[in-house]
Length: 367
Image (cartoon, rainbow, N blue to C red; front, side, top):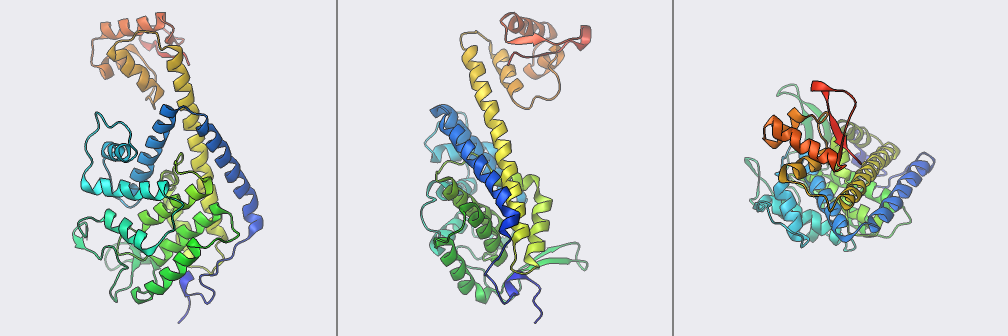
């Protein structure tokens, strides 16, 4: 049989890659990781917890979004906070499914030093599918997929389907996963970031479960990135960046899975994606630090409920410029009340008026 897919190659799974094409990118990623860990270590307890809560919430919701599963972010945040012993007041109770998804991620990140085993993977899979069903379909849970039908990644309408990938047969899975787990738990002389990239590709290529392979591959990636960082706290989200680059993610997976055992193209893409995730987090942490400094500066300034709400909104992704009419609409108050609120904050040095007059008058924070 002609070898079409990477796992059909005679050399599988003895991957090779071009170190020269990776060394600069890997150096940049490792430098950014070190800087980020250093900055996070300097944060106070409350800010650090807030950053961890935000990152895990985003990581979990975006990983599910890649597979078309939309989770309630408030429920995810509530479950993460509860699992980490943080305050959950004002947050809704998470349902059984959300709590299971969160439980998987918490175990991967908090217990990153523990080996990756068949039992652990089965427990994660059972947590993702507590009812034993995926949508309308009953699936094999907490065990490798079964049956003689090939596991294929297909797109297009019926009769015009395009097969992007076909995974190894189900009867080969015990052997395939034995190879995978032995390598994953072995101590090779390989940078842990590259190992995170390889286990991601290897797991999703074997595709050992009926469903949930994408989410579990990203969970495993987070576990190995935690090992690379040598800390259980997740301050950046690879899943969020993959979600942004989803088209490129599937394209590079298909190219790699239909090639030989040289996986340089995948490793280059993975490092570029991880660098983007780290840079995005570095930017958000800078915002967190500036926001903390802002509130420390104005901690003695009295503000009513509307003012507190609007000032906090201005620190988020506020759409457009702040005007008195927009203030009134968002804060649900009259135009006169909105203007009094704004003028009060201008007088207290919290806001300042931008250039322009009349109906075009707008304001921004004194950051």
